[in-house]
Image (cartoon, rainbow, N blue to C red; front, side):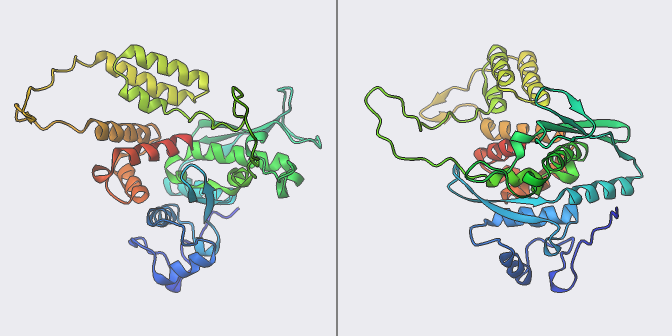
Length: 347
């Protein structure tokens, strides 16, 4: 398989490395590809940065910006995505540039009883697939469950390639997960079409129903997803962090996410006792000390910790945050940083 990808189509659509905004000609073509007026400036800027970083060309259909309705934000949210071939090309390019090695172990499929197979012969879809990417001798295993990624119609039946080739589609999702773990910086922020297919699954239709007094509402809104990492940072002591860690583990959080919470607990245990607040007289602080913006500092610290966990330097993290948020971290509200961190953690 060739590892060459043209970074530009040439002419007026060529994407320059020093380009900071889309040109009018480029914007016109992007609109024709389905990027409508609902897209935000920050999403377009982040997409440009991603195209430059991955060297994938949106005008040759190597990378897309797909809009999907987000009920929580009450708007269409645009997400970059490519094919598994785009992931493979990026991985091979990085390996070639650094003179490193890249390999795969045999793909495995799991049946409903939990037994693994090196070839899938059943007409029924597998329960899961496992792919192991080996970069410079280090293994990066990933498992994708069929039920989490399959694309369905309103009647519950599968669509397209998920109906014809369920084993292959599940394996592609597992491969994408493994490649993203092996190349976290190069593949951060872009997902494959195979992974994102389930995002188009129809939502369960809600019908109006009268509820009698004392009867629970069957359409009651589910409890929001907890942000365990933020809760740990805001926790007053190690005992509270320990309880948050236990809740996160019971919720099924990943080991690396649990380790971040545990590290916060260790730091709180070794931190000196907080000094008393300065005396305030008539609304004025007596001591001439500039108090830190705790919420903002905590948000930035959590973002940098997440970046370091995935091998991303502070400089690169600042660049990616600027592209996603449209401003330096120092000028962004804490909530926006927390929201970005939540999206990255979920991804």
